[in-house]
Image (cartoon, rainbow, N blue to C red):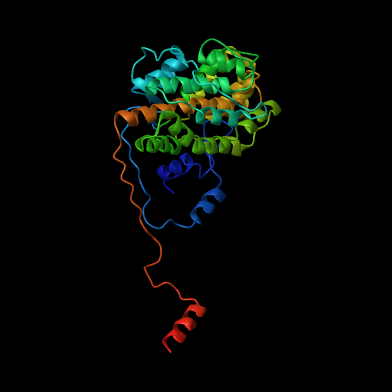
Length: 351
């Protein structure tokens, strides 16, 4: 198998990458390769969907991520999450105004956090501008979480809601900023298609949440958080990424964790190496900061909402010429089968 093919399978999650003892070398189980070779082949060529976008460049070879041409890691060191989200949405840092909630929320007290976030997106009012709808939606996500009201920046408000007890809000803000967008994922494509169909911002985000929630669930954030507490992690929980040299987002989050909570960072490094994936790093931050169990799932979903909004706003400004076409693969047209009773009745009618 060619290295390029192997990396493609790894990036799609079809083959697990195991890290060697040196923390850098990638190892692969021959049984996984053999299992992949035995898979049934798809008929026909894969359907490729190309969407022109100015938002995010994922440079897998160089191991870098860019938001509108600017290094996302560098941005996360100098800008707050609201500023980076606004930059993705509008292309400038002039600000999108305070993120405040204008829509009243009515949620059941026993609703799970993830369900609360989904309902916060569904129960939106219509706004005069997409940006107003976007800021209201983002603010509502924090307000929908259990706990009393909180003030401050978006990161500070979410920090309080997640019950963080150690470290600083900068850790959370960085985790949000570095995972807001990662190119054309299934969920961002769904958001764009909904926008192309004329849906408002909240409806587009609600549509994307279905695919996004499934992706987050498959990442096993909660299990990874528990692994740091137990001091042992299953290799299958170490999410793969498309970067050949390691995920720059994970490395940046781990470096910041080292600055603020070095003992916890050493535990993380001992389990997952120097360049964890963004998923693992988010879980590490949630664990190290003493957040409530499952907090990293919430961080991931909230950050992705900002990215979905960016795709929706770009789709509004420059619509993609989607031309859906169904490639029929069913049986050839034929006469409908006749029931025996119908055949007998037809014969008798001719007599």
